[in-house]
Image 1 (cartoon, rainbow over the protein chains, first blue to last red):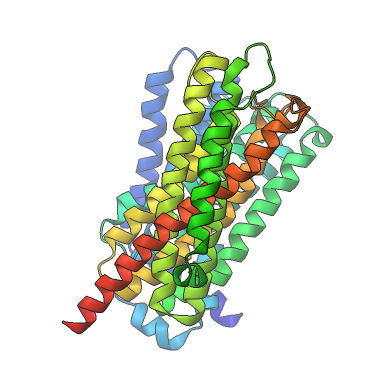
Image 2 (cartoon, each protein chain N blue to C red):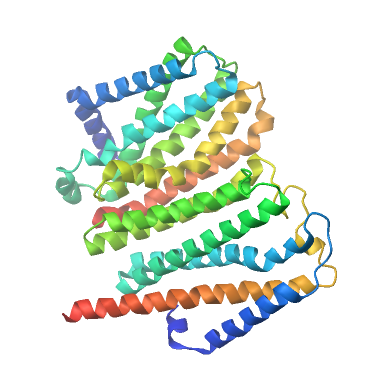
Length: 216
Length: 225
């Protein structure tokens, strides 16, 4: 457990010191949202708001998380001897989840400035956002570990990641559309439970399969 | 797969079943129904493709798990060749389904959950082959593609159950539409249908086994030279 915390701290310091990737992803987020604001200006209904919000989260997630193993390229030999693969993958999962949560709250803030804020039930919306980010971040962490070994990484991330992420994406988008449409908890309970179980499946698979990639 | 490579009797069985399927499927009497009319015969040529695809993909995942356990190169060849066959089944299933949908639903692609789910499962396995081609080191390629195979398969299964809940489906057997067994009063369809499932799946394993043999031979030649 101590090693996990140490690894998370290390990721934080690395990101803090080389501010290049962080400022890059922030600018990516801002310019994507602004571009879609210019493109969609005038016909933003709640459904469009919802679909656009999740599409931007999806692309931000794939861009932000694809770096999580790439930046370890030179360090991977040290890890190989120092830490167990399970510790490493837990730290990466937690870190990418926190990272994506921060980015999605930020994009929510920019969204409400530019497009307006249709959210009425903040608690439920945030809960759904949390589950969606958990699924996205953990699936993309696993995919980035796979794509890390391939030759054309950025294309492989999208090709491998998008079909796999569809269950999470379909569930979160339909949940959040219903939440924005003033749905109460009991009506989306079933979908939420399915979403939680899909998240659990992703994390469990990552946990079981990651050591095989790491050893190769 | 190992057993199928050694024996031959199932190939004769496959030929017999498919001859029966084709003759029976095209010539036997079918129930007369509005809209469906004679298109109900697609049952023997479309639905078995999905059964075949799921069975072949399941085989592929089983061998991927076996490969990760034992590191035996043979299992990787089984796994990738079965996945290859699964894609062929999937493409045939989508094409036959689209032809049928054109005449009954009025358009080949109506954004039906079943159609979307099948398209996504094809995307997953096409990505699997792109991944295999982009890795150069052989052992690394086998291991990583086996991992992706398992990861994607276990996320494809919930997808097949989730998507139909999101929207109503026009597909027979979904969303209140009766499946074929509701029409099949004299069990004529059923007789042909079950032989068709078995026959087409065996044909898939037959083709895969030829490919497996070919790859194994390539392997031997490479090792010898």
